[in-house]
Length: 323
Picture: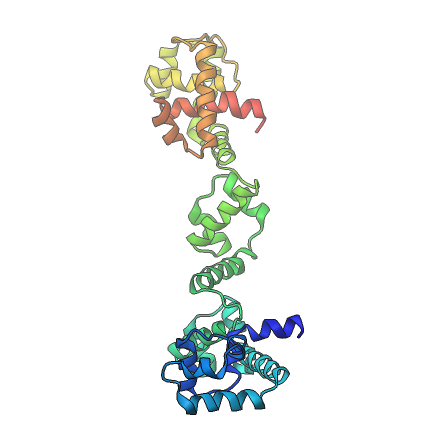
């Protein structure tokens, strides 16, 4: 007897393939006879001692065994398995639609004129036949990913990055690319993971733009300060001319110095920070930037005003990195 045949005889299918009546099959199973190999080892006496089998059952078993051919039984089981795994054309189409993750039970039902529940039942039947069927969770995630893909493929990475780094708001970017907030967040996350964009660069560019692209009033004030200091005017005179407090004037002059302006007849005022303290603050700011924090959050973490945070970023990060 070949190895294949011997293995077949030890399967439950080999016993079922005999086609014995349900009553006889139950008697055998209760007695612990689970395969044809077990049955062939039994004598007539063993069968007669089997509970509830009776003479009629013994005759059925013996006559069936005489008429049976093992190779035919094997072929029968093989054909039965193949038939069980075979899908109709409609089942194949339903399986393909479901596994594409583009459809729900309802949408597939509309295509075939069937109810949602009927489609669900067909999917369960297909799965029982051993075919790969994605779960409802996988289908939901797939539909979301397909939706996002359709939206994302119309977005240009470079254009998105440019708008993001120049400080365009989420609303402005969504409107420009005709996408919703979910797509924006998904796309932003993917570009951050790919290294195409960074929150750090966005913040630094925004600060650089705010400081270097002055409005007309701020530009006028800087021009007056430069001209009057060059003419030797005192800060009180300049503050009066610009209708500013002396404190506000000194802040503007400080910002101008941070941008690299050489203010005529000017000197350092206040108590400047030591180089060690500046380095410490800048390092803390960089750490917070790398964690994705904005200026206001950094201000709370290191207990320094947002204005000072921006000035330190501009002077020690933006200028040093030539952004």
